[in-house]
Every structure is written in structure tokens, then in C-alpha cells.
Amino acid sequence: SGKMQEVFRLVEKVCTEDTTVLIRGESGTGKELIAIAIHQNSPRVNKPFVAVNCAAIPENLLESELFGYEKGAFTGADKRKLGRFELAGEGTIFLDEIGDFSPALQAKLLRVLQTRQIERLGGTESIPIKARVIAATHQNLEELLKQGSFREDLYYRINVFPIFLPPLRERTEDIPALVEHFLKKYGKPQTQITPEALKILTKYPWPGNVRELENVIERAIILSEGDKIRPEDLPPHLQQHKSTSQPIELLEKGLSLREMEKQLLRQALEKAAGNKSQAAKLLGITRRKLYSMMERLKLEF
Image (cartoon, rainbow, N blue to C red; front, side):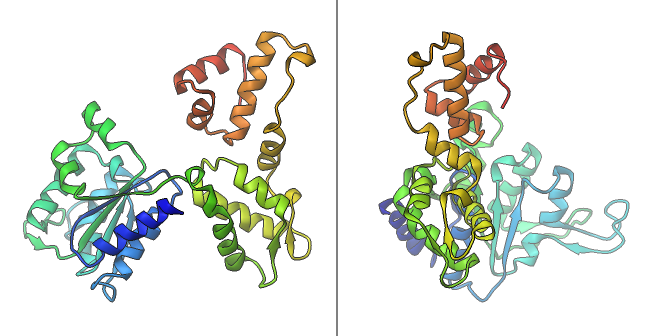
């Protein structure tokens, strides 16, 4: 699609530079794959690529994970350990979910980016850092700036070259090619998908983006009889989405206004696979309003 062509154009431009890159996009859009593509097309290709999922590491361990520690830095530190910045050497360090950094860690990262040096925990020696930094986030950093939970100076330091990855629902024309790719990755050479099943996939809003699509295809291949993926091989919520996309004549059913609201809410939640933000967007209301309606209508989802 045109949107992804623009992403690839930016990757091509920046891969030969040493500029700090910030990859932005919803969860599951493939931010790490873009970071790998930048690394693999850069002069650093034969050096390490070190990925750190900052949201998956407990906050109290993240600092020692990134910067390492000296022997005796804390109880249990019986020998020196190198952090991810040092392990990246002259390669690339990929900091995923940078929006989750605590204020203290943000200050330390800012200092590293400014001085190109780190200090291990419990140490006093300044160690030069040669790795290129690529960061990523699914969060709205501008909103975090307004709230005061993300440092403005760090924002400008990492936001030198932003790359925005569009969500899958905004590039549905890419779905057939992605499906083809995942069929080759997980299926047999002759595995195919029926037009009916593909139509369901292109109509679904994919709140989990490319990662969700990949999981769906992998599951469907396991469940499919023979070499064809059919609608019944897809998860129930995708099949329900197919049926709920038909207009429902609520008035003909003689439903009360309360029941109509409840059905509409349930449909939106099914369509969004339980993602409350996405369901609220489909209904044109705020997430807070969605929660209050669910509470009022005693709807659990």
C-alpha cells in the first residue's frame, strides 16, 4: 500500500545514517521488524542487534539490564554484568516501549544520549557507547508530555527521525499479501485460503494489527482440513464479525431502547474483539462513556 511504501522510503533514507530513530504505531504493527530492517540495511549489519522490550522488564531491574552493574553493586551481584548498551557494541540497540520509562530512567537515558557514555550500577567509570539507538512506542508521547509524565528534552532527543506505522485497519489492501506471507511461513507449500475466508479477514478491524493476523493464520492452518482455510477455521469472533456486519432490524424485533443500546454495545465490542478503545471509536463515543454505558446496562465483556 501507499502508506507502507512511504515507511519503506523513510527506512531506506535513514538506514545509512547514525540518526536516532523513533518508530511509532499501535501494538502489533511490526515496529521491531522495521528496526531490524534499518539495522540490516545499515553499515552496522555485521554488528549486534540488541532488542529490549522495556515494558516486559520490571522497573527495578530495567536500569541494571540496560547499563549493567559492577560486582557488589547490590545483594546478589557476585560478578560484573554488562548491560544491553555495552552488549550492542558498535551495532544497534532497540528500545521498545520507551513511553513506559520512569522519570528517573528517562533522566539517565537522556544523559546517555547526550554524553554517549554510561556508568554501570555501583561503578564510577564512564564507558563510551558506540551503538546506534532506535526507540519505539505505541503511546501518544505528546499526550504524555502534556501530562508531565514524559520529559520534553528526552522527547526532542529521540524524536529526530520519526517513522509512523499505520494500523492494519487503515491499510486493508495489504491483508491478502500478508496472508500469503503467513501461509508460506506456517503452512505447507499448497496451503490456500478460500475467497470467503479472505473476505472475512479484510472486513475485520484488527485491533491487534499484524501480530493478531499472524496468530489467526497460524491457528487456522492447524485447524484446517486439507489444504484450504475456510471461514469455519477462523476464530469465532471473526465469524461473528461477519454476521454482525449485516444491518439488524432492531425495531422489527420489538426491542426496548435499553435492549437496543445493549445489542449495539455488544456488537461494537465483538467487532473490536473486546478492545474497549476501538469499540468506543466505532460508536463515536469516549472510552469513559463506553464504560459508564456498560455499567448502566450491566453488560460484561
